[in-house]
Image (cartoon, rainbow over all chains, first blue to last red; front, side, top):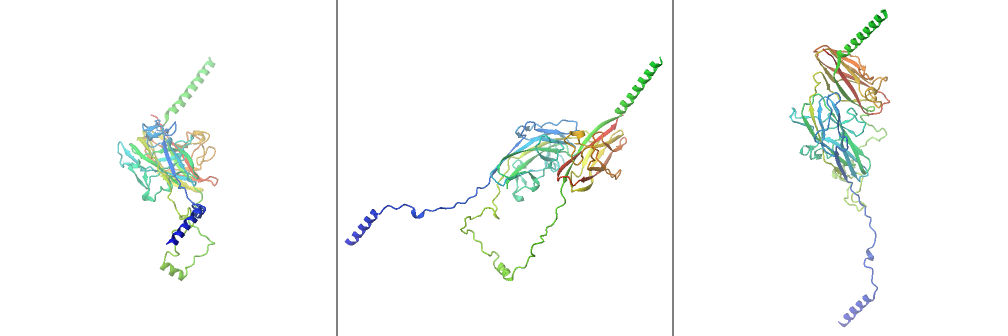
Length: 222
Length: 250
């Protein structure tokens, strides 16, 4: 018993006399951390984004086009006002798209009608009129006219949410809009802006009525 | 005295001529006009419908042992979910990361369509709004129809709009061009004559498309022929034609 106590005392004494060891010396080293920053895309739309917005054209119709009451600067509706069937109109500064992305591969912007034109007041028969080859888009340019080359909007294959006011749900059609609906793209990251004019080419078969729809833009990183 | 008579006769002649000219002007008036837009999409020569890689080795049948292994274990060789490599999920390659998307507030569009007061006299009924054309000649039947009517005799005229005569010096591009270049776009009214005529591009009054007698309504197809020269870059162009209804006043 005395021997055990002496041994324990010697062990304690030895430990006390030893120099202190670094706390983690045995575990130091380096670790390689690889990570990927997920790309983000943000976008905003500004209708009637510049002074001078509104419809022109209607050459030969006998009336001068003017913006409708729902067209307000930097917002509101792309409101062509009263237009005459059988004539062509240009709506200047209809919409501006602002995109911010860190995606080094850039992005693609799609634009399409959530529905065809819905007629009301009075409700025509049929109640809708095709957006295809009626409403066109072209990049904003001061030289644009009602006859400038332009591309027709398409009606979406996705599901309009709340008639289009809530956007378009593309999940039933693969999650992305049709490639035919590309309106703009950029090959690199950045904060970029693009303005669009709209053209209205009214065939003589358009019934007299008020027509509405929503154009939905979708930005997808590359 | 004789000199005074000569002056009187000369004045009378001038007056008569003026009356005749002004009366002729008053007899014809432009009742209505319409613009027609045809979009022309020029594409290069048709792309090949298939691709054959000549230098590729012909596919060979798998060895019987390989077939047996794949039947026994279609997932071989084994794939390890985490191999201890630098990446558990390697970026790029065959791995797809969900693309980020944004759908900003939709843009509402509205218009109020009013009836055309001229529709009883002049209408254009489009059938083909876009002509997809390769290099060379493309002919299309009944691209659109034109309707005309009036209670007196009338004539329909056309000319290419957006030429330097009608829309400034910056215009006059493909396909209508500017006078004295000949338009690459030609028209024909097959119910009247099969001959194609290049669109007039020297400004108003243009060329006569057809004429009509009093109370004659006509709705006729217009065929178009487009020639795309090899020097024309691929792209989207518009041809704008103005149709004018001139009527004889009572």
